[in-house]
Length: 162
Image: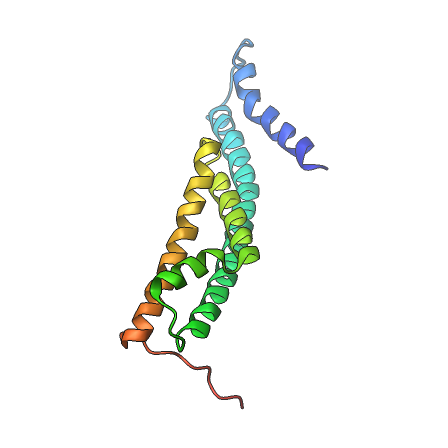
């Protein structure tokens, strides 16, 4: 069964109690009728939220993967520039042009994640929000360079191979 057919089936199950109310009620023994009336919509919402949760988790993992890739690329640039005499202003300009593929992947995956989190969001606000995250990463890279040069932060070396 395809997803579209499944969603249609669930939507029909959710709408069934509403359409059933228009009919003449039959006498019932106990509260089974009331229980079923609430169980079917609850089960439908549980099933539908499972699909959304899986998609949301996948989008989150994708966003985190590309964010880490962008940070690793920026860290490579920082390590390359620390021993040089490049000024902070020059590095600030360099970091905006650095890692274009990683930056684009992070931007796109973050935009998709925002849309999944807030489906009703105005699409014209998604790109500026993702741009803010990219700019913050670039500012943090400049701050890390300044901290490394001033001694506030130490350069971490990789553990020796075994």
